[in-house]
Image 1 (cartoon, rainbow, N blue to C red):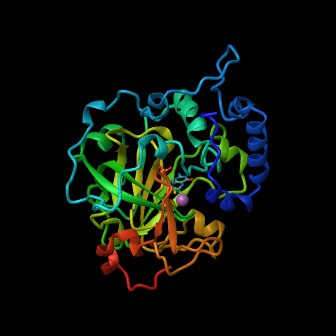
Image 2 (cartoon, rainbow, N blue to C red; image 1 turned 60 degrees about the horizontal axis):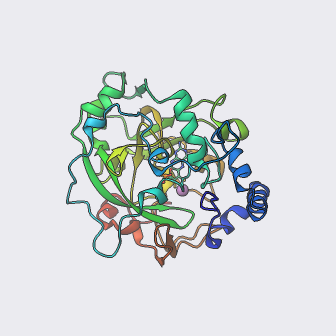
Length: 337
Ligand SMILES: Nc1nc2c(c(=O)[nH]1)N[C@H]1C(S)=C(S)[C@@H](COP(=O)(O)O)O[C@H]1N2
Ligand SMILES: [Mo]
C-alpha cells in the first residue's frame, strides 16, 4: 500500500469543506478495497501498458523537469548565512516532493506529482520565456539561459509555511530576487511587482477542471519586500533543478509569508505604480490578505495559526511570527494583512 497517498488525519479537515471531499472518499474506498492502483491511474498515465501499476522510483518522482539541461549549475555552494538553527531538521526530499500545492494540476496535494510528472514529460518547460513589462527602462524577454546563467547560484536552507498549517524545511537553489529586479531596471515610479504564472487551460488538468478560478495564477509584492535579501528566486531544490511539482523551471520563495505568496512556473514580471490584485485575495479576500505574513496571532477563518505540523516529522510546534525571520519586521508597521 506504499503507493496510496492517504493523508494523516490532521490534514483531513482542510479538505472536507471542498468539493474534493467526494474524491477523497472515493480514494479511501478504493484503498480499503485494495484497489489503490486503480485510484492512482486516475491521476495520470502512470499505469503501465501491461495494466500492472508500479510506483515510480523516487528518482523519477524527483527528476528535474528540465532533465539534464543546466545540471552543471548544481549543486551550488551553500550560503551559511541561511540555516535553520538547531531546532529543525531538513525535510526528507521525497516527502516535500509528494505533498504539494499546485492548483494548475489538482487541489489534491498528494496527487500533484502524479499529474505534474507526465505533464512535464509531454509538454516540457523548455523553451521558457519570462516577459518583463510595465514600469521598466527597457521591457525585455528573458529565456532559460538568462535565468540559469546570468546570476551566481547559491543554496539556502529555508523554513516554509503553508497557510493550511503545515511547515517544512528545504534547501532551495537560486539567487536573491533583488538581482533579477535590478536586472529588469524598474523606473522610479514602480512601487509594486506582479508575477503571472503559466497558463495552459487545454493541458493543465486543474485549470481545465476549475474554470471558475481567475487563471492564470498571479501574485504580487511591494517592491521593497521583493528586494529584501530573503526573497529568493528558486531554480532548484535539494541540489538539483526543480521537479515540475515544485514549480519548474522557476518559482519564488518568500519564507516569512504563507506559501501561496510564492508563485510557481512564472512567465511574466510586471512593475506597477498601483497595488496589483492577487489570485487568492481575489478568490477569497476574507481568507487571504495581500501581505500574508506568517502570524500566529491572526487566525485564518478556517484554521487557527497558533501552531503548525511539520510534514517530515509529524511534530506539532508553535507558529513563529514571520515564520522565524524577524529581520523582515523593518518592512512593516506590524498591522499589514
Ligand atoms: N502557480 C502556482 N503557484 C503556487 C501555488 C499554485 O497553486 N499555483 N500554490 C502555492 C501554495 S498554496 C504553496 S503552499 C506553495 C507550495 O509549494 P511546494 O509544493 O513546492 O511545497 O506553492 C505556491 N505557489
Ligand atoms: Mo499553501
